[in-house]
Amino acid sequence: MNNDRRFRLLHLVAALILPAMTLAMGCVSPKDTTSLVYFPPPPAAPHAVHLKSFNNLHDLVRSKPSLADLLRGGVVGPSVGRPAGIAYSNGHLYICDTDINAVNDWDLATGTARRIGLRGDVVLVKPVAVAVDDSGTVYVADMGRAEVIAFDAGSHARLRIKPADREAFRPSAVAVDGGSLYVADIATHVVDVFSTEDGRLLDSFGKVGSEPGQFYYPMGLCMDMSGRLWLSDMMNARVQVFDAAHQPVLSMGQPGDRYGDMGKPRQLAIGPDGVAFIADPEFARVHLYNAKGQCLMMIGGAEDKPGGTLMPVSVAVARVVPDHIAALVPEGFNVSHYPFVANTVATRRISLFATGSAPNASNGRLRHTGRA
Image (tube, rainbow, N blue to C red; front, top):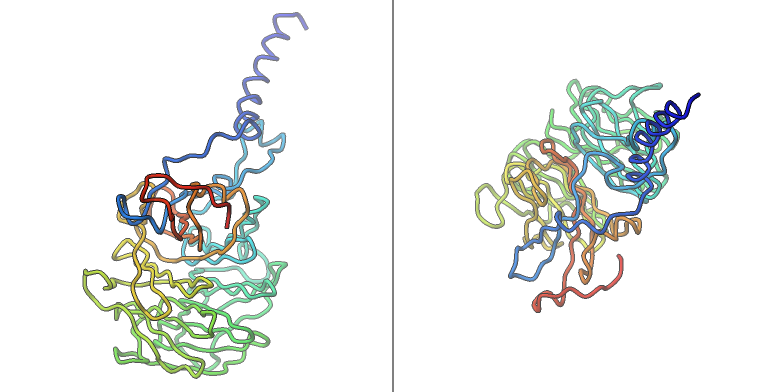
């Protein structure tokens, strides 16, 4: 090979590999502050901040590239198309994706991923909600299959759950509490309670209506730390809370466009301190309520840019996240929660926020206080 050809070949290799190495392995760029949007906006003291929005796991978690990745021009990470229900457990973000009809399991510490229900013994048809128990079992509400599928840690379907004697069943939300699985059914407007061990129907409560204990299109379920069940009552524009005996004890929200009103509340999540995060696509916001049912604030907005939540349908809340994600938090902001919000429309469809406080915000400076 003459020197001229050797030079051209080396130039081609460098052109292919070096930019990818710079992107995937090269120096980490300084913290991106363009995505930082505060709620409420200045000059008020902030209690929430938008950190990042993304469609691709590797937009959030850097991953060591393989040679094939480098030759393609960089790391190609798992992505989400049309997210529905989401959940967070032990550093993993679970995202129902109705574009591919599977559940993405993203490990936010390592950047690795798997897809649940895409193939195997049970193939998902329309996964809309997901919950994860302490053993790692993943419960997926599948409207297309008209059943809830329980997948073990190996992605095998351990249980297929539905009422045996019900002609119509459309599971819209799931929540797990010890040995009990709560499932909202929008075909009959009831909540069913199943055994997580064998899928037996243990109880059912509720009926269609607008009185306490009744609901019209139950679209979200979540357990709080005291064992109460929170339910998004979508067409009644409210959220109801039920005690261990399945009796209504609290209600919040009503139709309207004022502070404390709701539009069409969908799925919700609750932090360890009892703060509830309620996705409301009609308001293009996430409502925050405390354990007494008092409205604290809203985050998001009807804008396709950082801080916006064009059509939020689900929320997952983390208390602790891997260090490289916690590093996105601006210095001096004391974090209490990391809410992940799934939006069915937007350029970037998963939005990550931090909620908490910035005690020194009034003097224009934020002091570094460490990671959550």
